[in-house]
Length: 238
Image (cartoon, rainbow, N blue to C red; front, side, top):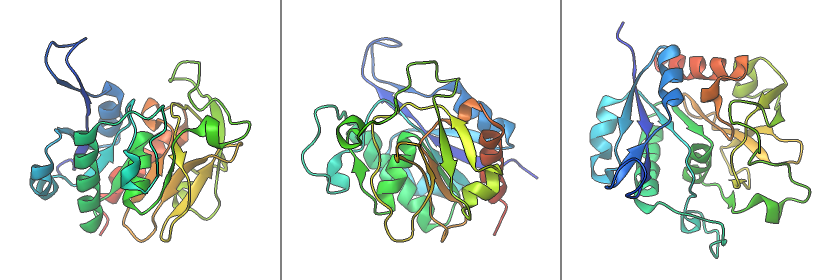
């Protein structure tokens, strides 16, 4: 059997650093984790007009994170918080390709900022800046390295995530200042931090639709590896 082709979204950077010209970026371990779970990852440039072409070819989609935010206009979030940084072309592409993948019932895994984007596509709203909205919030932008845990999350019983990871609690890494703000119709919160911040969502009506606020591509727990394995396994399930 050929390996399923997994589309992976990219980050975009302005000139400077790696190149004097605009450039795409993607941390290697996203692709390594997909490969280890049995997939064939392929990077997706930000071409909104090519969404249909990409969806004809890929079997599943991973929406990655990045140091930017979904524009609040996508979810009726009101005035833009001073900390918010947007990347308009990336968000336009990711919104369209994620919406299209769900419409075709292709497996979707959202990671960190990708979870937030997925939540918005599913009709949810976001907290624009956790420290201003959550009293005594944890350090969700953890000071220690990202390949180490920053806090725990409680995994909700009866959810698909709980079935996949086989644990009521996971140690996770954390690198975000925003989070899902609600639980709209059709969306189930499947993981929560000790301070109440939503750390994971899923939409049971789809073949596989899960978003996690942490970075499982670092594989800091068995649950992280199982999540990628379940995602890849869903590409064969009809």
